[in-house]
Every structure is written in C-alpha cells, then in structure tokens.
Image (cartoon, rainbow, N blue to C red; front, side):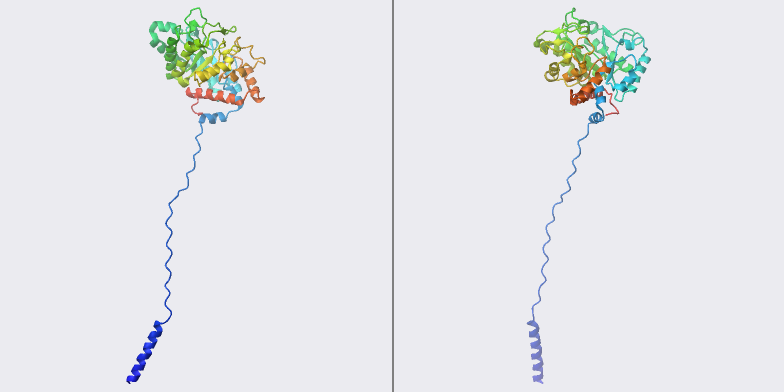
Length: 390
C-alpha cells in the first residue's frame, strides 16, 4: 500500500515538474508612447484689401471727356447754359454782372439750380465779389441794398474786425444764392494809388496785406466758402492785362520778401478751401518768355518753393495778354502743361475739344489730366459738393 501511495506521489511530482519545465509565457509588448501634442497653429488671417478711396473710385468711373470737362471753370454763357453743362461735363460756371443784372434773388437761385441739376458732378459756382470796384452781386439792388465796400474802406471804418464781419456777410449772401466760390481776396501788395491794382488791393505793405488775407480766408473757410487768392505771383505796378501784355522787371528778391507773403498766409489759413489764380503778367525774373499763367517755372515756384498743393487756375485765357501764345489756338493745352488745374475761359467750346484731341494724339499725357482732375475733385470735396458721390 505504501508502495502504491509512493508511486502515486512520484507520478504527481513528475507531472508537476513537467508543467514547470514547459515553454515560458511571452509577455505582450508595451504600447509605444503617444507623441506629444503639437501646438495649435491657426490658419493665417487673410490680408485685407486696402480701402478704396471713394474719390479715386469716382475718377476711375469717368471718361476722358468727363475728366477734361472738370478742368474748365468758365464764364456762364448767355444761352444753353444747362445744356452745355451736360455736353461738355463742365467743372463750373463763373457769373458776371450780365448774369445777375436785374434778377431777383429767387430768379438767380433758380437759374443756378438749373445748372446744378444738369451736372453729374456738382459744379463750382463762382463770382467776383471783392468789394469796391468789383461787385457782381451787390451791384444789383434786388440782391443787396448797397454795394459791398472795398477792403481799404472797411479797414478805415473798423479795422480787421470790420473786414471779417464783411467777409461773413458776403459768404452768407452768396451761399444763399447758390454760390460756393468767391474769387477773392486780392492778395496783391500795392501801396501806390497810381497802380492799376491798387483800388482792389488792401493798400498796405506786405505784412499788413498778409494779415488781411489770412483773416479773410480763415473766415471764408469757416463759412464753407471757397476762396481764390489772386493774382500770383503778385501784380505789383503792372498794367491791366485785359488789354495787353504787362512785363514785370522786378528782381526775384522783391517777390520773396514781399509779394509771396500774403499768398503764403492765405495758404495756411484757408487750407483746403482756398485756390490760387495766376496772372498773365510776364515776370522776367521767373520766365522772360511766357505769361505767368502759361509758365511751367512760375508753377514750379508756386508748388515747390511756396509748397502749395491745392488748385491752381489761370486768369481768363480769352484776355489779349495770352491769346497770341498758342500758334494752333490750343492755349488751354499750354495752360495745363504749365501746371494749372483749372482753365478760366469764355472759349470753352473750342478749347475743350483741343485738350481732348491733344491727349488722344499723344501731345498731352493723360496723367496731366488725371492730376489736375484729382485736385479739382478734392477742392469740390472740401467745399462739400461731393456728398453722396464720395
């Protein structure tokens, strides 16, 4: 029995040893560590398109004919005024005594409004209401009981305070009638009563004239009225260029030390609301061959040496002092090439086609037109005329 029990125990031992000697169990491999999370990188934001200047958008929509028309600030014709605004895309009308004579305020308002209604781009509506000898509006008793007094007379009555009060009264009246530009003040320095320009000037030295111009242009700007400083580079004792050529032989230093001062004062006080009118005088120290209005060097001086970046306009190109300078009659082309932005003329029906033709045949670069048109539109924008368009 004991032998049987021992045999069973031995057998169990052998089975146990066999089990222990079997192939060991293979451990399952550990999973690979997960890669560290990468930082979040958002998609780059799109670069916004630069904002489009509304004025540039307006210019981009204009044809060559429309841009050229904007450069003409012309005498209002006796007939077909509204029709010509559409036909020639005019930049503006200047009204003279003929256009205001005997009209009531309402009649004048309605006439001006008819011109504006015809315009795709609102018009500059200008007048020479200097006071004294040049009064296109107050010479009509239906529009004002008495004529506006000259600057010299006003100053003698009440100093600069009377000057600015008068400027304010002019602005209120003109704006009520539909005008947005008064071709004033006269910035010429003249102290000699025998000078042609003296009755229209302030009549004192350069510093006093600069104070006068500064006060008037500042008041006009505050009233929303466009001003025009005239007659650059300074009339001095020159003769009347309406009837012939005037030659100025003064040295350049005279202009720097005297004539330029009132203009510079007006640029600063009038800012974006003021423009400059260039005379037809031949100023020998600047250009001995061409009238100032047609001289590139005179315009270079105005832009570069005096730093003026606003609208520059000619005096009336129909005056005898300039009529002989364009052999083919295209005096407006010469004026724009010289650096003017606005052409003042009665002869726009002839001159506008000549300017368009000069661009089309390559004699006048279209960039000249674009530069001038841009300045004219900026002036109109400053005067509040482009609301709804830009």
